Every structure is written in structure tokens, then in C-alpha cells.
Length: 119
Image (tube, rainbow, N blue to C red; front, top):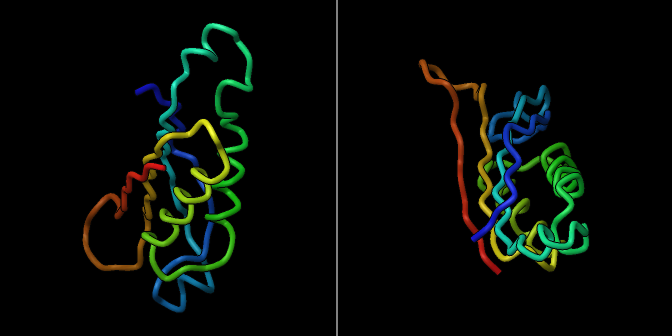
């Protein structure tokens, strides 16, 4: 299956269980894989046969920078369901949501959730 890939999109949001996460916010990184047949777009060079990745970015930005959620799983789920509902050509998507600076003790690079959803 063909795919359009958007990597390391960076946003500032207010998701988390702790009060300081909801008050102060933090960075979030998002990677997307958008699965669709791109052959017709490749042959015709017409946008109507593909997915406008600037619109996909805008959807993700609105969700991640929007209303606060307790869990990054819920944020990823909203991203996936919104994208699948918004683009008729989209057959499936993979969403990876990374929280690089969670307020937990220890040494690690980040915490993340990755989901795959199909129509």
C-alpha cells in the first residue's frame, strides 16, 4: 500500500494527568503514515487524487493544540478518527504521538503511543 508520510510535526499542548501538565503544557511530536493508492495521483499530477498533507497537518495541529486530554492515547485516537473521516481516499493511518518531556523521574528519551486504524 502506498503512503504519505509526515514526520516530526511539533506542537505545544496541554495533555496529561498531572495538574502542571494541564496548566503549563509541553511539547508533542507527531508522525503520520497515511495509506492510500497514489497511482492515479502520480499519473495525472492532480491533487484531487491524493491527500493534501497541509490539510492533514492542520487537522493534527487543531487536535494536539486543542482541548486538554488526560491520555496521549486519546489524542492519537482523535487524530486517527478525524483523518479517516476527513479524507475519502484515506484507507488507513498510523499515528505516533511522542511526549518528549513527561514529568516522570528517570533517564529516557521520550514516551510515545503508536496506533494503526483502518476504515
